[in-house]
Length: 323
Image (cartoon, rainbow, N blue to C red; front, side):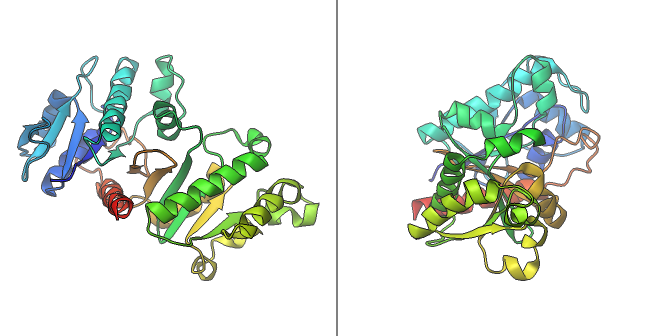
């Protein structure tokens, strides 16, 4: 039997546990990491009749049951109410998932949403899954990519204040991000020669230098270099027209320069069904495209669609990597 996926249940006060419970209906080869008492309590709260199987390496998952790898909460969790005391619990579930993926116990990890603010409130510097997993795996550079609505959108920078973005986009960074994007599209998405569109940083891609020189001074030399090596990358393209449907038919992925340049378009097209993927890691990691939705926790209204898509995406990536 091949190794199962592992799903981290995320912020205990949010919808993560609700979504993980819904997975019991789908007989998927996976293990959920979280507090078993929390999951049992939330199942009762949602009036879900779920058979639990508590994970061991001898019986990693069972058809018709939800396999749970128990990590204990630091304090009892209240549905919809954040508690910074459980920030370490959230990070421990991520640590355990990474450990299992690195050892081969799990084939990849899928993450339910966490709450960045409450982790920071606990005095732990945390900007997101992407950066945290890079640190855990000692990966110097990773790339965030979201997929959905017929698009794949990667980011040159992730969670940075807008005023810092231009300074962060250097030639070495852009080259490394594009090489990671190219490599993972080939190895984990089965694309021998992916077509990558690159968004300019400035309006109208700098308008020939009149609206900023980053395209001319930083981006174009890098893109010319990679194109000369055989990489199929575009010139810097104006982001305001880049996402027109007729243009997207000619590319496999879009690289945008900052978080809110590309993700609003993708989330408009696919919210609730998109997938967040971390490229460049030595392990496979996908995630939902939404937050903790504290107001929906325990109500039965949380939509499991994005988590199911993330699991499906991880399975496909595992398949391509092993092919």
